[in-house]
Length: 341
Image (cartoon, rainbow, N blue to C red):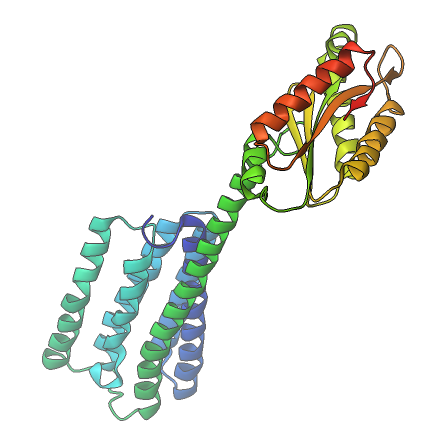
């Protein structure tokens, strides 16, 4: 993407419009003070035009607002030169156009080239006006205006650079945060909000299997889940899955793994956990699930699970999961509602 994205280009334009309105307000007050009514009217008119541009920008018509902003900057510079002459440095206001044009997302490449090309032409036109035309209001001795316009150019460019830098950083940070969110979402099962198999692969990659600490894996399957779906419907089945996932999530540590392995099957990974401790944790999970009472139109549903667990030490994850699956099958064959370790 080139420059700022549209959302922050809108903010950038709004900042420049506010600064422009402030500058014209200060000029208007000064021209009232020195008694030049035509210039007061010009400042009021420009301020009203900037207000229209702000409404357009707020309505997300960023390009239209941007063109108004730049057209006013160019036209004010030319007209002010015609009225005041170049001695007050007003011609250099045109330089404030460069940065917004070259960094503003909402301009096409051709539009950027055309607008930037007008800058030297405009400045030269103003010097030609100075050489061939006597200013209507000769302000060559006005030190305030000379200093004012010089400072507006210098500080205006600095303000544009700072605004662009801040908004660009916000844009980059926002995009990075969005990327992290999308990446995290890719590791989450949308129904149960547990991790998915993709995250489990990442979890096992980080797990230090070569350490002396033992890790325990457990596959848990909801008993007779097909019967629950057939009898009560898939919506109730989803509620059962969510309830079981909630029990698992609340029963393990942050360093452990709780994953929806597929369908009605869950994988639990208990890190740095002795087999005796793992037995207590897994048995507590089984009991808490057994105590669930899931409401349905046909009455409350009792839920049980069967699990198979084994130690992951030197063996590979795949071999350990195979043994867990074998023990899970053994538990199903021997009456269900049991954790086989």
